Image 1 (tube, rainbow over the protein chains, first blue to last red):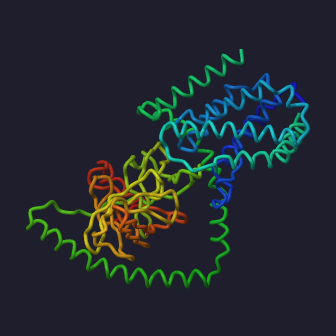
Image 2 (image 1 turned 90 degrees about the vertical axis):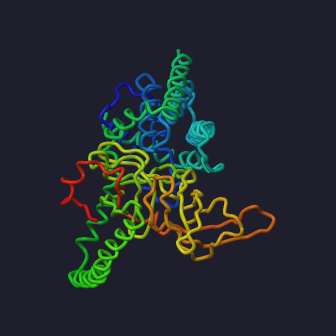
Image 3 (image 1 turned 180 degrees about the horizontal axis):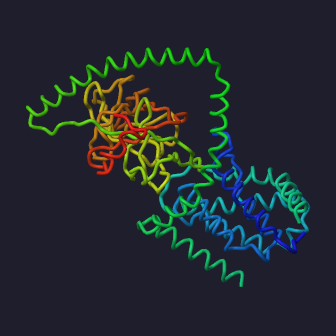
Length: 159
Length: 281
């Protein structure tokens, strides 16, 4: 389903919610498992409207995430633009995939993005943990079906 | 076409990363974006404030009266202590003058609220609701009611970012309160464990010792409790003893914190305008 008209107010609202969800509303004990809401949002919007949203959108959102996380500016911008580029390159096939396969792709894309973030942090000499950085990719993939159904539902209702 | 755009994004991002990490050029952009993101911080804090509000309206009158009584009793105890403290401070200053050293004046503090945690689980950082508009600048120490919490690393107009002493890139110069032995206390990335670095086996430190900030290095004010030594392992095969300590401040649960203005970091306008506004000595 590629959308003809994009509901921009809805886009802004979902971005705001995703930004809030990336700093709040999650139990502190499970912080390592917080899904990458912004990455999922980028995948969703690029998948649904590849003509409107792309690398520039993802880059801007990544910059905002950098500010929220207090990481060096540009790290998440880099990782999210990569995710957006991957989705752009494969969106025609991704639309056809059944849901479980889509989840797998989401795991792969978010995981690659996380890996890039981890890599740049390591290059800058900022100490990080072990493979915990891949947990969000796993939780994002698990949340993806609910996320997709919810977003599609809202989109269909409003358009 | 896609390739060019990806390449552009990658080059731009990497330039930005390098620029932000190795030069101070990124700071204005970060401050500006932080201000733009104020609604996000505000929204993220709504659930906590709702919870606080619910607790406030659902507390019974009896409980409030009880709490008031305990607080009054506690205030009496503290006032008595502070009466003696005034005279002790005067005496201390006189003695210091006799010794020809500079007087240790009281630090000013500003009360701030923690409005957010960093979402990155590898970073131990919190966000405060006071920024440069209230005179909060990078480098200032943050305390809670029981000890040192961390220091400001970045401040924008309305909020500031604090790195906690448990962050694994953080270190505090401390001394053992009992013996005066100096050491550097490192964060480990765990919330409830800090480590003393490079402590020779012979240094006078015991389990249960209080570590206070030594003021060496000029970053942290002197004499605030930082941690209590929880475990010491002396292994003859190792060059240094391994000393673990538990932070005094409740790094996980504090909500109200104090920003310390030491004599050097105190802006001039602090003197007249802020006396009636959430400030105490």
